[in-house]
Image (cartoon, rainbow, N blue to C red; front, side):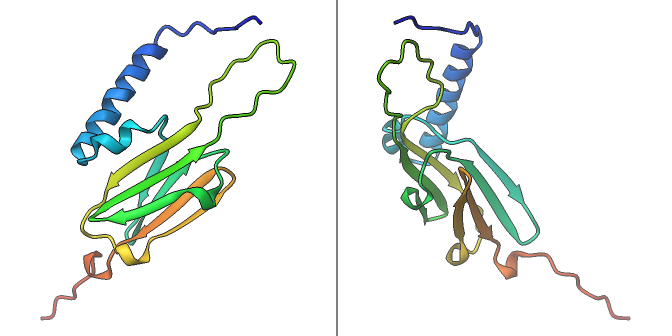
Length: 146
């Protein structure tokens, strides 16, 4: 079997920096142990609106029903597992770039969120989590009387 490798001189450097960032993020959130068991972390986009935050996590190949989303003490946690692809018989060469195994991400949320109204749904390999802000934390216009 021949293994094909693509030469990417900065890949190892980038992976090392990403691992350091994940370690410090876990340590800052007080969870160095749980993250250590994760094999990968999904890429995430976060948007803020006047009334909510929306988080999009790339989790292709993961059944949305199997993803564990929890919110405890202002920390949103995403956890789950992507199964390793079954190796087909007769493969002469293979290049694997997709991570498999357990994933884990944590996010500290501001005090302004309404933890009781968080919703999550998955579609086309993307997990969407909507985190509304409490009405009392949203700006309101005050009329000045004269």
